[in-house]
Length: 445
Image (cartoon, rainbow, N blue to C red):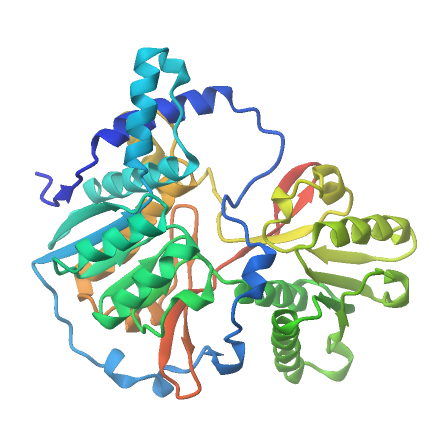
C-alpha cells in the first residue's frame, strides 16, 4: 500500500508533459554535448563575493554543537513544500490551442518539463521506498515569475512545513531561502549553484556545487593526476575574479605544504586583459595546466585560437568553466581539438544496477526514459527523504559524516561556515572530471 501522500493541485500537467516530452524526444537532433541545462554564466561571477567570510571544511568540533549533538526526533509525518515552475496557465493555454488545431502543435516550456520530470522522479522513488514515516508533498507552481513566487510565499505562510524543496531559478530562490531561514525549515536546493541564496541557514542544503567547488576539483585533479606541472590561473580582473584567484592560490598553497620540494606545484595568477599573449606564460619543461576562469566568449575564442598555434611546441592541459560546452561560439570542434577538461556533477553510469532498475520503473510508468531532472528528483527522495525517515529533520551531522551515491550525481556535503564558525549552508562538493575526446565525453575521474 502506497502510504505517502502527494497533494498535486496541478496533477493534470503531468499528462501533458508526457506527450510533450515524447514529441521532443522523437524530433530532437542533438548536435552538441549538453551536461548542464543551467550552466554558470558571467553573471554568477558578479554576485556578491562571500569568500572572504566563508570557511570550508571546518572540523565538526568547531561547528555549532547544537546542530551536531541533538538527539534524534523522528516524526510520524513530514510535510514537504515542492516549489517549481510548472507553468500551469501556459500549459492550459497550449493544450487548448493544440486540441483545437493538432496535437503535434502542443508545446511546453523548458521550465514545465523540468518541473514535471523532477516530480515524476520523486514519485517513482517514493513508491520504491518503504518509509516508516509518511511524506505529504504539496506542490506549488511559482510560474517562474516574481508575482508567482510572492503568491507561493503567501501560501506557505498559511501552513506549516518541515521541508522546502526548490525553487528552480536563482532569482526566485533568495526569497524562499529567507523564508526557510526565518522559520527554521530544512531547505533542499537541488538546482542553483548560487552561494548568495543560503541566507545563513545551517539547514540549507545546496545540492549543486558552486563554482568554488568546480575550481577546487580542477586543482585537486591536477595535483593527483598530472606530474611535473605548472598551473596558470587566468582570472577576470574584477572583485569576483580576484576572489576566485585567491581561492585557487590558497588551495594550492595548502596542497604544496604536504609535498616535497621537487613535487610542489608551481602556479601563476594571470589577470585577463584585452590581449591573450599565452606564449609568455607557458613553460617549456613542464606540463602547463591552464585554468581559464572566464565566461567572455570573445576572449575565449581568441584564447583557443592562440592555443592552437602554440600546441605543437608545448604540452598543456586546459580546464574550462561549466557552461563552455553550451557556448554558441566555442564550437565542439574547438573543445575536441584541445581535449578541453571539464568538471560536472552529473554523469550517468549506464552499467549501474540501481540506475537500470529505476529506468525500467520510470519507463513503465511514463513511457519514456528519465532525464537528468527525473534522476535528481529520485536522488532527493532516495538520499535525503531516507535520512529524514531514519534520523529526523536534524540531518546535518549525518550528511557531514557520510558521502552518498545517487543515480547520476554523488553527494559529498561540506559545511560552509562564517568567521564565527557558524554553518551558513551545506554544499555539495562532489564533481566528476572529464574531457572532450573524439567528440565524445571521456570520464577521467
